[in-house]
Image 1 (cartoon, rainbow, N blue to C red):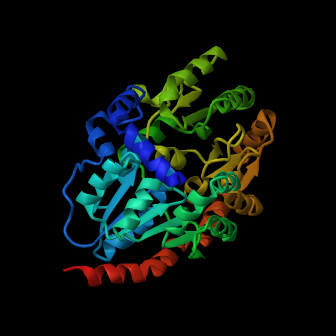
Image 2: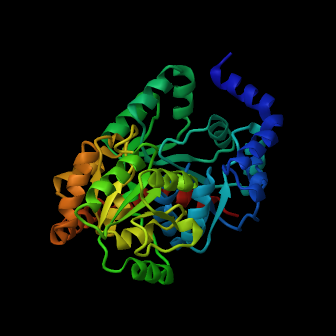
Image 3: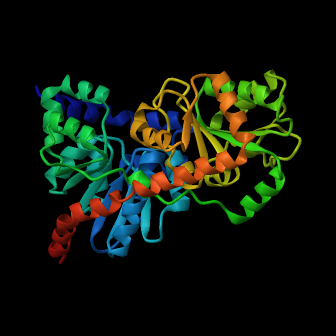
Length: 425
């Protein structure tokens, strides 16, 4: 029996377990209890009249990358539905989606839920970010004649090898994609290997995303609390990296007594854990979630909230990007670069290798091999503000020069938008 048929039958059989699964995820903060029905395909909003383009991004990064397309589609008079799969992405999108766009959670990949979702929303075109491929979603869209386009498409070598172990399923699924708009030539080649028939290079949408916003009142309060203290930030950190950053802080504070180190973990719910780690090192941390500002009483400030990186990037001229010292692949440095931050990172940046290579080559970013190296680089830049500002300007210029993907993608999907308009009653 074909693998895709087995998958479909398995998801049908497991559908009755959806509610217990979602309830379990609620207990761990992974689902919004008020919007669980959306995960089973029930709509939380009415469908707008006219053409509707459905855009999907798995989590925060993928969802935010879609914003330039959402804005361009709205300008064209096209209704837009944005779906994602995480509570954190929903929270961030709530403050950043332009007027005219609506958000829903993507249903679990069970045929009953997907059919219910499609029955209500009846999208004319689907744009999925990166390599977010759910078999029942893809098959249902194809059965209804909804063109499916991968935008900002990228896929790792490891993922390619996993799909190639399922040659029949992979080739069939990727063959159902109407158009694949890859970030670069390497990604394009990988999608072709997997069976995608129409592949083009369009660039990286993340270069076109506007810098993260910051509430003016909160920003003024934050700046007032920081005052003239030297400040650096470690953002999107993962377990193991906070300890390295705290050790770097201890070393730096010997030379910069008034130093403020801001730690914004990738998963804000780890705030108390990080504060406890700081206390174990003899430090006196403050938690942003408790409503405390980063005043002179704390040398370490844990920013355990969602949607406030724009505030941090506007105050800290120096930013260390997480998941680069720990095993991983780095996190996206484009947002702090757009806001003129000098960037530090560890050696593990494979997920954003091209971006970091451009920033490193322009001397807008620097790589630290370990915690001691990180402390030395941070001290050098904090003691030379002019050099730090020069790095920040260089980074802003780099990311500006690499923009244009949203324009390329809109050009590529124009025939589909025209077809949608022609089919409207």
